[in-house]
Length: 301
Image (cartoon, rainbow, N blue to C red; front, top):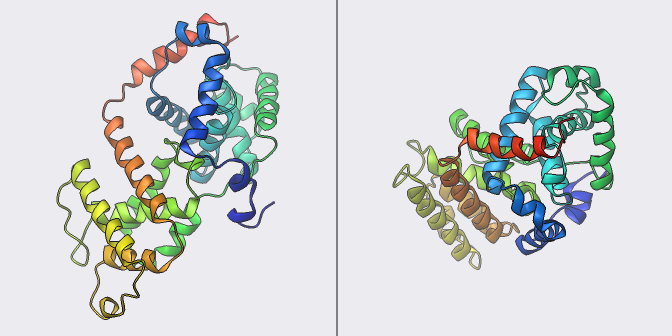
């Protein structure tokens, strides 16, 4: 087991560029274009939202911890970067990912309990087979590093209120419905979540957000990150003596760190874009599109 993210299989084998990830998915679709054309799927973000809802429902019934559910979401995203979704029963994959994630996060549930709570089958052998399938496709690289630890460690550093901490935690949870876990290091995600939380929920010691809309959020966060980028070459000695808002303190901290500000910028843009897309999500349509290919191909038997 890797003691830290930098030595982990997550960093070495499961971090991609956007181009690499797109190539992987395109190759999967090219393998059987007839199948792809026959069964339309929701756009990827809507698909991720639907999967997240199913994981949350199963997790609530089983009493699964949030970190285990986050691990399950990442397992699913990794798995479907290797396997075309239309060749699988997503409900079985979801249940199996939760079952496996619980074991890896040391909060295991008996396989019969998972099957009894699930919606795909009462056959434990199917879940057992799918577990080996997942493990094989992920090359037994199952240790996951999450942003939660960094987020908890930095709460005191930036004097986050309970409300800001809760919002940052929620943003971290939401990022699992995007490609960010496969693109950006966990500590960068935590910092992005703190920045967005401070912009979205300013108080008397913070900034005043220009607007509650995504465009206002984007303007405020981009201004802060541009400020950090401009501060990078200088020491900022005069600025450090002046009272600072939380966002200014975060910007100064970023300017003095070795963290890639481009990663923070990209992550922020991705989350803002996700929240815009989320408003158009239709659960009924997503469920119908998935159920259509599952039943037509006999994947639920």
